[in-house]
Every structure is written in structure tokens, then in C-alpha cells.
Image 1 (cartoon, rainbow, N blue to C red):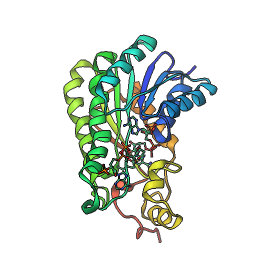
Image 2 (image 1 turned 135 degrees about the horizontal axis):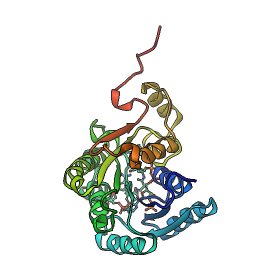
Image 3 (image 1 turned 60 degrees about the vertical axis):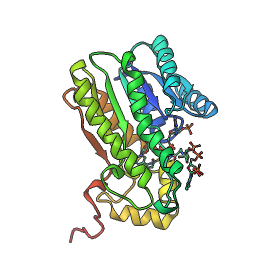
Length: 258
Ligand code: HXC
Ligand code: NAP
């Protein structure tokens, strides 16, 4: 018997990486899962992989920047699986670029996917959420609170995501909806880390700065999502849970036990 038997889960940005691992974990725990991403081909392939593992899943192509398409998809998913118990918003884009060379459209593109996309996903879902009882989770990043060179777009967008979490937790709590965020640290085998620390030297430098001295796994993040969505977290709302090996604590490279 799975911990999410009979529950309905919706994950945005789930054709790959951390969000796909989250969808998989809920699915293996018995949930009926809807997944979306921009690419019809990639989302169909991700859904087929999950189905091969026994997950009851449906994939939709949907760009989180397109509110009208999100409305259609939520209506279809609701019709198929019923009201949403758990909603995860994790679609994101990122690349390293110096601010003075970044075009206004490059900045806008990342803000539109990460920040506007998160608002759109939560907003378009509202009438399809189980009330009371739904748990909403945004996937944010340490960049929301720690400025980083060459990531002004992603830092600004994720800072906004944290505030969307807190504002909606405040507004939607009375309807019995909890809203939280997960802030992963560097996670192994992800597109995010390929883009941010491509070579082994950069990876080693980064690991050496972490209190726990290693990257996390996609499952580490998925397990945190399982917790935040569960009854164990029924009094937890408006929080950002760091799953980051201590990344938020700052540079730990000098901290060695004698
Ligand atoms: C400078 C760039 C660029 C780059 C794109 N642009 N890549 N500028 N350096 N490397 C510019 C383009 O020139 C264009 O501006 C504008 O950005 C939009 O580009 P498009 O290709 O048209 O956008 P789109 O097709 O919507 O693709 C979005 C994308 C792309 C973000 C640019 O990389 C993508 O699809 N990413 C999704 C996958 C991903 O990034 N995963 C990692 C998420 S992890 P102009 O002016 O020319 O029109 C993550 C990391 C950890 O977020 C947490 C950090 C916060
Ligand atoms: P990833 O594999 O590239 O995942 C991003 C997903 O978003 C993909 O499935 C992509 O699918 C989808 N997507 C992108 N733009 C979209 C759009 N406009 N509409 C709908 N879907 C869209 O990257 P990841 O590294 O696993 O990152 C996942 C999440 O974790 C992101 O929110 C990221 O910011 C966060 N995070 C990651 C790390 C890390 O170490 N990797 C650290 C901190 C935070 P399509 O291309 O098919 O659309």
C-alpha cells in the first residue's frame, strides 16, 4: 500500500530532472499523476517511462507562460483524476550570462518561465484544488536569497517565487490550502548543474564549499516533497525548506574538524 494511494498529484515542468523524480516518487507511492512540460515529445516519453514503472500517469504539453493552456490542462486533469491534492510547480530556465551582455528578452524569458509561470500554475489550478486539504509546492533555489554573478534573471525570478509562496500561503490558508517551497542545493545529474558547474574542477570547488561536501540527489528533493505534501506537515505553510547540504549556511570550505 502506497502513502499516496487515491491521491491526485500534478507536477509542472516534469519532463526531466528533479521535477520528474518528484512525479515518479508520488506515483510509486500510489498517486495518480499528471505531468506537463513544453515539449509534447519529451513529456510523452517521460510519461511512458513512468507508466513502465507502474505509475498511473498522464502527460500534457503545456507552456507555463500560457495561462489559457494551463486552464485547459487543469480542467482535463481534473476530469480524469479528480481534484488535485498535491500541486508542484517547478518549470524553470537558467543560463549563465553577465548582466551587461544579457538582452532584456533573455531576462524576461527566465522571469516569465520561473516567476510568472509559478503564479500561472497556482492561479489556474485554484478551482481544481481539493479544498480543504490541497498542498502546493514551488521549487525555488538558494539564488532567491543569495545573489550570484551571471544569474540576475534567475535570482530575481526565484526571489519572486519565494514571495508568491508566502503571499498565497497567507491568502489561501483559510481555504485549507497549504503553500510551501523547496529550495534544492546543487543536485547531481541535472540540467541545472550541467549549466552552472559544467567541468569537474568547478564541481569539486563547489562541493568543497558545502557543509555536507557533496551534491544532493533528485530523490533527496522528492522525499522532501513527499513530506511537505503529507499529513505530517499539516501545520506547515509559507515555509521554504532547504534541501541543500548546508548551501544556505555559506562557504564551509574552511570548516574542518581538528
Ligand atoms: C545569453 C541567452 C542564452 C544564453 C538564451 N538566451 N540562452 N542569452 N546566454 N546562454 C536569450 C536568447 O538570445 C533570447 O534573447 C532569450 O534568451 C530567449 O531565448 P529563447 O531560446 O527564445 O527562449 P526559450 O525557447 O523560451 O528557452 C528558454 C531558455 C532555455 C531558458 C533560454 O535555456 C530553456 O529552455 N531552458 C529550460 C531548461 C533549463 O534551463 N533547465 C535548468 C533549470 S535549473 P533575444 O534577445 O536574443 O531574443 C535552474 C538552476 C538552478 O534553474 C537554480 C537557479 C535559480
Ligand atoms: P530541468 O531538468 O531542465 O527541468 C526543468 C523542467 O522545466 C523541464 O522538464 C522542462 O521541460 C520544463 N520547462 C522549462 N520551461 C518550461 C515552460 N515554459 N513550460 C513548461 N515547462 C517548462 O532542470 P532541473 O535542474 O531538474 O531543475 C528543476 C527545478 O529545480 C527548477 O525549478 C530549478 O530551478 C530547480 N533547482 C535545481 C537545482 C539543481 O541543482 N539542478 C538547484 C536549485 C533549484 P521542457 O523542456 O520539456 O519544457
